[in-house]
Length: 116
Length: 108
Image 1: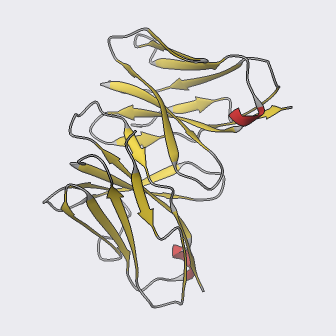
Image 2 (image 1 turned 45 degrees about the horizontal axis):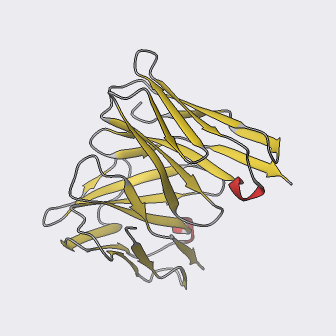
Image 3 (image 1 turned 180 degrees about the horizontal axis):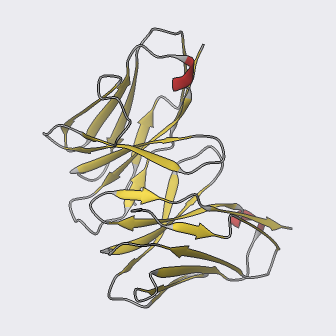
């Protein structure tokens, strides 16, 4: 089946530093990738929709300069949390959709970010 | 709102019993998808039902869709302890949004 690899799975960083999270579709091409944030026992909050070769579309309330998304190829999207603060600590999950609009999403295993 | 809302929020049953979860929504959809999430992991796609379909089966899973009522249900038959997880419905519009989910606990 389709596999999405997300790295790192866990990261601890100090306030003010930046963290990059990678999301790769290993055996299929993903024209669209989605980035979500999830708080404990809560649902996934859509942060942005990333289309290959174009700028990401951010949801209302999500700071573009804070959460930089790059989708340079059909198999790789990255999320960079810039100047991280403790309130950015969360579980970040990426997902990728294949070329067909009706394709299901394939999810990475998430990244647990802790900012100290 | 462009996301589904699952009901109930939490469900606890004994192994062997059936579990039914519902999803209601307010907008037009292309398809509706159900996902499962084990604690601390990503989501796993379970089943996709298109807007012109009424029912779909996959193993012990049965999904129904009623577009006139804007609702869908997920039935897990003969549940197992390993089915313990959170279940989400997702509406495929232009993007994919998730409701709060149903936390299912299956007791051995």
